[in-house]
Length: 371
Image (cartoon, rainbow, N blue to C red; front, side):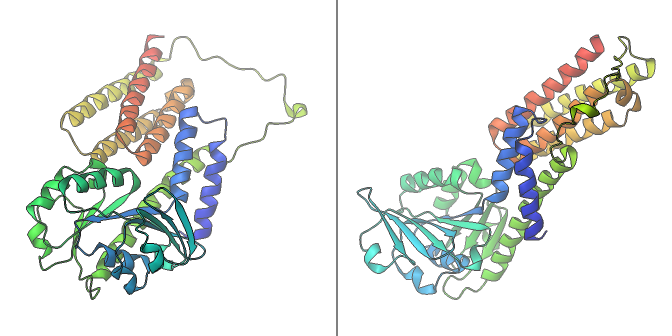
């Protein structure tokens, strides 16, 4: 999708966030999706000292190779209109400077750097390099600090040792969701075949040999994630459209009559309602089994999204419900939208919200059956 279309979609999504037709929960999720669409993808560069993180950072961020020769603290490299540096010193003071970090600034031993660069390599992404010492305690602290600040992580390793394997297994689950192993030593990716990563790459930081496949993979992952977010946004825009202004008073016909739904459903509608209820019940049972299996977070969101899509399709396919219980059919549509937004947000709290949403849908169906 072109940048113009993406900008148009984002503008429409932001307008939709203020639409009173959406529930408060849907508006909040819509705002979170808009924020995610507008923000660069955050890539974390982590691993033991000496694993080539600085060279990987320079190569991915379009920095001059000599930049990697400096001793650097933990830093964030982000897109900007012009090169600039913000440095936090050990005493808490902050220094702002034009350009990349100069040697005299680095000589003051900053504890954190924020660097802006207009290089095209940073288009749509932000790099966070985490620097620690070799102790397990410091590495664990660095991983915990980085977890909420990255969307995708690159573990740089010379030989993928048992020490690293144990550290990675104990790392926050959020880092595992989208993670790649970048081997910078002599070890082949096959030697780390059992490691919990989405991909394994062999890169020589000194010569950049093997860097192209890694960059191509990152580009594809970012495109896929962006496309999913755009698809979710376009689904909402298609369903709700642009906010509609109220009709002028002169155009309102006072003779319009609201015909109430019958207290007793016709037999066909009652049968369709029963079928939908059984589908909701069976879906809840299937999801309970999935939850007991301790699946990964992505698999659980897949299950919830598939469940709500199935239920919305069943409700929409029942013409009698469309005619006699349109508000219930609309409830299934809204639940499907919310499930998609919850998946975009991700996290344990959103999984709990998805489970609660399914319970609410079941209660809605039960109330109609008892009426």
